[in-house]
Image (tube, rainbow, N blue to C red; front, side, top):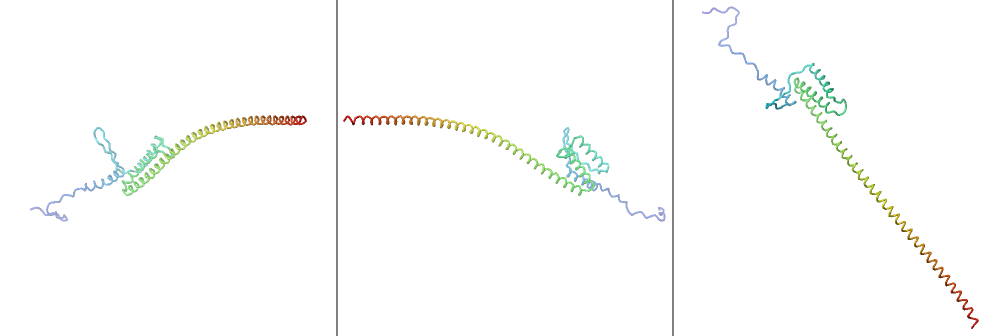
Length: 227
């Protein structure tokens, strides 16, 4: 027979001891998978092929620290300086770098709070839509201005051509007017000459008739006494 257990010791449990419950690895993996899926939805993974192998690069789900944010700002300033981005006006380089920086801020925020990250995603998409609308409006206005400039240039060329044609027509009309004036002067001159000839002829006829009349009168006077 076994000796009795000492006083104060709890009695052993009846039957075999059950094994400890297994760790909840599936739940932990699911919990870790959910932020990664959200990050992949916000920032799609980059895929490429190299040496007949397909590579996929996902966004990191590691949380960031204050030092990481400071380094992000330093990297942004350095990239802006290296790529010589303009400080004012429209600059595609500056827009690209700030967009990448904003995506990184969305990633860091999404890891800590998925709802805040999704809200920032909506803000980013709205900003991009607004910029795209302004870009489309700018491009259409530039195209409209170019069409108007080309049309004005064409109208100017047509107007200059029309002016040249009208000037040529004016010179032709002036030439015709000069010819008509010369003709009128010639006709008037011939008319004056013919009138002078007619007047001279008429005067000579009148003088002739007057002499004939005078001779007849003299002949009549001389003929009366003889009778």
